[in-house]
Image (cartoon, rainbow, N blue to C red; front, side, top):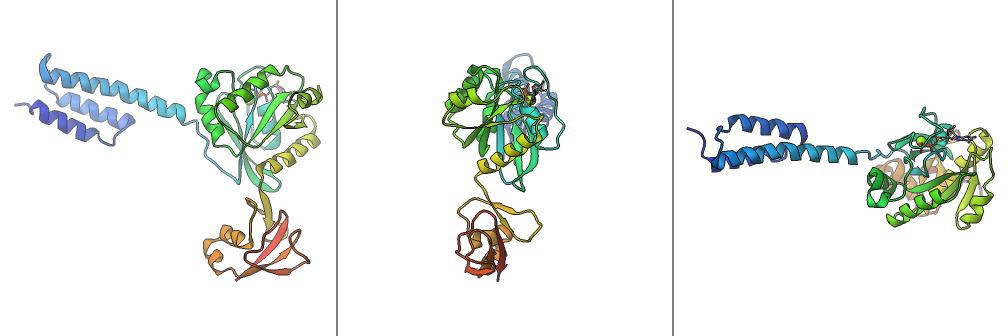
Amino acid sequence: MPMPHRTFAQVAKRRLIGKEGRERIRAVRELLEELPDYRNGPYADLRKWLTSEIEETRIRSSAVHRDSIAVRREGAAQIALVGPPNAGKSSLLQALSNIQIKTGAYAFTTTRPVPALTRVGGVLVQLVEIPGLIEGASAGRGGARPLLGVLRGADAILFCHDASAPLDQLRAVMDEVTEAGIERPAVLAATKSDEADGAALRAAFPELQVIEVSVLDDASVERLRETIWELTGLMRVYLRDGEHPIALHPPATVLDVADAIHHDLGGRCTGARVRGPSARFDGQQVGRAHVLQDGDTVEILD
Ligand SMILES: Nc1nc2c(ncn2[C@@H]2O[C@H](COP(=O)(O)OP(=O)(O)OP(=O)(O)O)[C@@H](O)[C@H]2O)c(=O)[nH]1
Ligand SMILES: [Mg+2]
């Protein structure tokens, strides 16, 4: 005597609650095996429903998959490298960090966002290459909508463009970013500057800071690194000589630093001894509300 079809439907729904992907498909298959094999009537309808559940679960899983190109944030800031295909983004990422990444003299060498953690201004910052955004991205063309999602998570944008290439592709990329409603501090890298200077880019985008860079010229890469640091908008505070600084969003006080080190220390902190740009003299004793400046060295007092 099979279970009444209404009861079966309830049991089935209950068993599927909270299950997704492979787990849900397995549960559906088990239910299908338990289901009486009638060709017509309510049991046949249940079979049709369960079979469609398998297909829908598959579609949902692949959609989740497509969105999961999201990049896990690391470091004090995330900077997106954005530009037309073949602009030299991967080459820059490689020159600025230690990662090995495929570069190529053709478009769309990179197809997924590639993160690389590197030190800029002594602070760990995450650079992310966004694969060549093309026209229509904000409308979802070229599967670029998830890429714009990644871009939305970034703190700032380093636009990259081959200094000798025509400007329309770069304009198209910038338009896509604007159309997607993404506004971030930005700088424009005129890449491959061993072949052409950035004059054309400077003339075309007077509102943007343009920095020339060639991966064949180490000094230019280091200048770019310094520019990226400025782009983060962060400030550095040193706790000890010879150690890496901590990064904070200005304005930052002594209390902010103590809190950043450890929440308990924030509670106990009474002030600090400060050396550097915000101190009137080396070792000046200040209160916890004292506003620090980039490059200060701080000894928290508790
Ligand atoms: N002369 C010169 N060539 C460069 C420089 N940087 C990159 N290239 C060349 O430009 C081509 C594209 O470089 P990629 O770094 O792959 O460019 P991309 O922007 O990552 O390209 P996609 O991922 O395909 O969008 C390669 O052939 C590189 O060797 C540079 O500073 N100078
Ligand atoms: Mg690339």
